[in-house]
Length: 532
Image 1: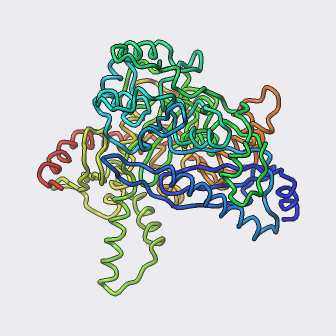
Image 2: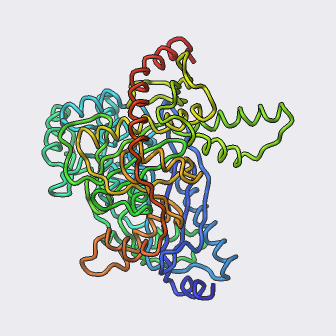
Image 3: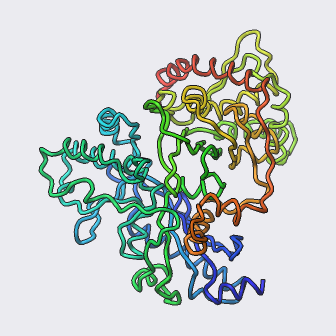
């Protein structure tokens, strides 16, 4: 503790702050990358005039509150006040749309990744570029504003993401880490810059509008992990620390998106590695050896913080329906006079799933509380179906629900692995689905056909990953890659357990997934039969 106290007092600690969808979190790390303090601020987006948004006041208030909470916790724990830092970095939810004029005024309220208002633009750009452009990408938001004839478009001086905006407030620089930039506009992996061919096509597409800008004029400058991204200005220091204790001049690393910090926090930035996050939603990211052979709407192409190509599969639904069933079972137990610990219920039910048949014995479930683009459904209707001769027992029932939590992800991963022949040496799992030892890990390995590892020692997620990126900028050796830094200096002592996929499980899951895909018409019929 005395060593940490001295480190903080001497300005040797490193800080990462990440803006998530419901929580802003700060993590302070020591010179061994261990978290030593944290702070947080809860917030929520709101629907205004048809758009999900956070106001600039929300952003500023949340940032200050989060930092103040960290500062108070450091004072309480170590008896010192933060006045200086070795390095600092900011990350946030990727994608979305923040457009500013020459005076730095926000032209329209921040449009977050959550908005599903850009379908026509995303489809048109995907066809124009022959490259998958998801609805949540910044370029989709920009082109949809053009299609809508919105008055603010001619006044745009630059567009950025939430992380890019915060970084500009801190440093005055209009820059973005390549991982976050890759969710604004496609990256040419050969040059590691925005794809100039696609930029030319976009400029031609909107040439008749005679805007006073070209696309390259309004996109942020791309930086890479390890690059110097400016220093904390006097204005930035005052914005972050209202009490005025924090000094200006602290070096900042490039701002990043939450996908990039997640990859960093799970040591998944090297080729043929990946990570899968499984909680309320589920997504997997795999670092690719080469570009894909064709466009797949199920797969987003982004990059690591140091510019390697990443294939990402994202599904909206994962554990929510499992949680609903657990709640029902607990109510049943209570009705019968039994009070059971919730954690024990999860552990027992998950372990029971290990006894189920590998194809779930004729039981099919859909845990869709919301729509799934990959499966072509716009809304969710959770349900379970079974054949008359199904082996309807708790083991098969639970296995089916865990399978379906992974099934949409598996559809996308099958495209990567079986169709595109993407090689995966290791995947690191994290999130609530993996809390019960073995079960989620074993089934996920079967779903993706690759070993899945779980770390027994973990950091603090995205904000910790952002702090590590800041530490990499401040402390890397000459020529040391991000992957080498993570392997040798951050995760060298980390313990993990790894489970390889078993042939019988893989074959059973493949049989289940065919029924899952064939049965999607039942889900669509349920949406029609049970309107909201």
